[in-house]
Amino acid sequence: MIDRTVPRFALFAALALLAAAPLPATLASQETWLGEMLVEDLGIPKDELSTEVESLIQGYQQRLASEHISSGEVRDLVRMVLAADTGLDSADPIDMAKRMRTIRENGGATMLEFMTRVQPLVKMSPDRYERFAAVRQTFDVAAPLYHDPIARTQRVLDNLPEVLDLNEEQRAQFDQMLASLKESGVEKYSAANLYQELLASEDAGTSETSAMLRQRIDSLLEGYEGHVAALFERLDPILAPDQRAILQNTREHALAVAPRRLSDAPADARSILRQARRLKLDSAQRRKLDELTRATAPAWRDAGRDEQAHRLLADSVMAELRKFLKADQVRELESRITPAPARPKADRPSQPAAQPPTAPKPAPAEKAGEKSGG
Image 1 (tube, helix red, strand yellow):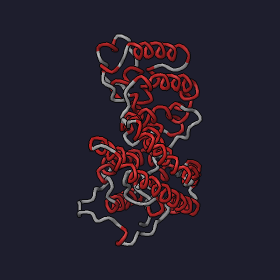
Image 2 (cartoon, rainbow, N blue to C red):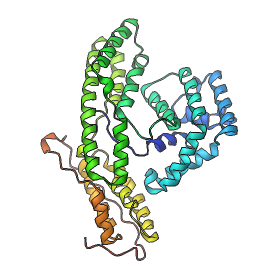
Image 3 (tube, rainbow, N blue to C red):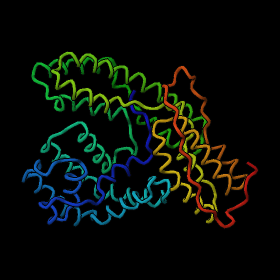
């Protein structure tokens, strides 16, 4: 199935590609984070950087520093995001969003121009293409600040002939398949607006609207992925063995398995913590919430795709929140969380039993507030 997760802060995940790292000797003297991005974070080997690419790196770095944004400004923001561990959940979302928006508006057009000129000069792979696309979206002021799986899959399909290195006969057959796919009405599928509405609904705490939007997105993705899966099935027989191996890897990029449908997704630990942050908290409560958010991050990652582990972790987080929230705050938080009906067992993938992760308890706080009755 298409990867249907909705990372609220995909923008900052993409920005993390610009984090500071050691530079190759040929680029270190230029002190350029653009070169660092290409060599260290986009996975482009040093020997693939032509003189033309290095010239572009140096020129655009100087232009960005003098006209728009500095490497220090970008790296400071990156370090803030990485230090928070869970992204904006444990940092100040308003301040960070404003700073990132300023960077995008001031330097976005120049960065897009740089990426457009560099991309044809380096060899692409599915993974590298995805990273390029992520960075491009980071600096595209017209792009949404979240991940649209349908748009991502379409980019993979558009890049497929180059990735598979199709010969003329194969390319002609692929083009015909792609044309048939478009004639089937696949272009009507777009989740971008629905994701935007869903994020706004979650911010507003309107649970009924969120549930309806999740169901609409699920229906849309199921229809789209059926068309794309059929395209891959038709493409496989015309490929050579080495191309089939690449296709399988590409298929995993385009049709990544997700643990559950959006409409079945219960409120997980991170969404509970986000909603808790929207409550009117005093300073002691906010400090306790920050500690709990940081303590929860490793357990949330360890839970991976284990749905039961995520449910248990969410219960653990709620139990910790009840220890320092007032009774009326707990009631408000519970009203903001959308309970989702459990999927019938027959529809669920079987999983081996595992020890569920639990959120480590943060240190006791001084009179954080009245405890609720449970």
